[in-house]
Image (tube, rainbow, N blue to C red; front, side):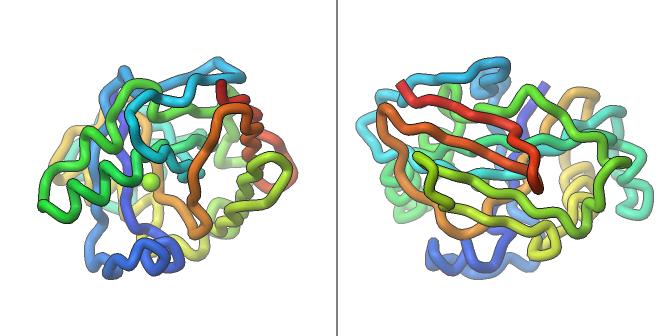
Length: 203
Ligand code: MG
């Protein structure tokens, strides 16, 4: 399986990163070794870099597809969850400055912790969903799907033009504003509406 991540999908986050708004979805990949699931704690990666949280809605692909029309994209997923696109921010800044790929900043081991709880999209209103991220009890990110620049269906259609999607692939759909560094000892909690989807302790 693969993990596909969308960049700059919320205008307020693009602004805080001093990045331009994209006219087409921006995506990058993390390998399966980035995925961290069924855990309630993880170690702060030892990369000599500030590691930032980016809380994101995550879509699980349930059927293989290529060149998927956005109109039919809903047939390719039925569950979503919440995860963290952990980012070595100063390494990423160096990559951006030199025009280099982002893998060292984004694709490292355990850079994609996700909740083990899944929400059936039939049970929610996906176009009007909110999610929240708390660091040590303090609200840091509050995202609304209506603020996504590119919808999940548009993302699936766009990515599948380039890369065949397969069952079990995960798509991180971008982060809203409020990203910041995590520290050892932090308690990180993520909610979709009122439901707590994860609580991670950073070791
Ligand atoms: Mg991200």
